[in-house]
Amino acid sequence: MPEMMDCRETRDPASAGSSDLGLDLLLRQLHKELGLNLKQYKPNYLKRRIGVRMRATGCADYLQYRQYLKQHPDEGGRLINDLTINVTEFFRDREVYEAIRQAVLPEVISYKRGSGMWSLRAWSAGCATGEEPYSLAILIMDALVREGDRPRWAVRITATDLDDKALEKARGARYESVSILPGLETEDYLAPVEGGYAVREEVRRMVRFLLLDIAKPPPLRHLDIILCRNVLIYFEREKQSHIMEIFHRCLRPGGFLVLGKSEAIVGAAQRGFVPFRRRERIYRKKE
Ligand SMILES: C[S@@+](CC[C@H](N)C(=O)[O-])C[C@H]1O[C@@H](n2cnc3c(N)ncnc32)[C@H](O)[C@@H]1O
Image 1 (cartoon, rainbow, N blue to C red):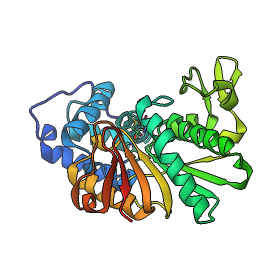
Image 2: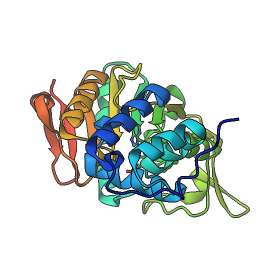
Image 3: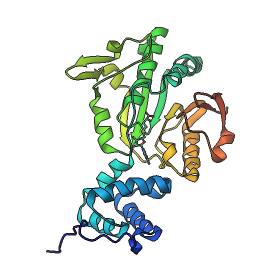
Image 4: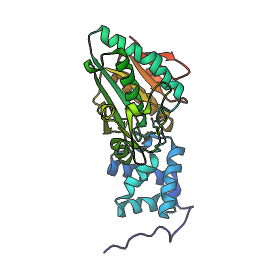
């Protein structure tokens, strides 16, 4: 039986394994084995996150960590979990959700009704544990109920992430604490259960969760709204620009793109969008 590697025994930080070449070889191995192109992330972010796993496994350099990954098939999944930071909450950055409630949804609903299309389609890209797509579903449900014709509408929010553990929690739809926007009653959308709340069936049914790398084009077209918040900050500019082009293709003309508070449209896609609410980072695809 081949001897299992114990990274904790040999430490030589000055070895070739600590170099960019060592990192490059590691990234190629991960791409081949996990099918994930980690080169799309910012190098410093990658080094920091991989460093966390290297310390946890006692590996002194990238070459040792490559070896460790070969011998411990579960480690790839742990690394992905570490790379994907899932911080999120219901109605994160309230002013953005207020703008969606007061400005975006009335536009979308009136456009769709005017063209006789009783469907509303959205994508939450990098949805983490589900709070973001459920928050959007709650606002859509509230708007349609107020309009008095909720039963006529077909609503589909596709929520995607790379982290299968986060998606498992999202599908479970149970949360310890929830804080929603003023004017909405929590219990209309979430039922109190032991230890917290469970998203009510009518809200859950609007959202489907998929494991998907954001850099790969999804099977989505003619979307009304895309939310991609606090995800692109981890990506290299070139990759951000590639992802913006994916968003542009997936939206219908006049469709809305909502980014995070410290994110902006970059690259060639800038020409295809106009700002709708600058402060809240909401853009529209040009007609
Ligand atoms: C900080 S959370 C943002 C969650 C939510 N959008 C929000 O703003 O509250 C970032 C999410 O992006 C996901 N992510 C990172 N890289 C990704 C990729 N290549 N494809 C899909 N999701 C990714 C992570 O797994 C994580 O759940």
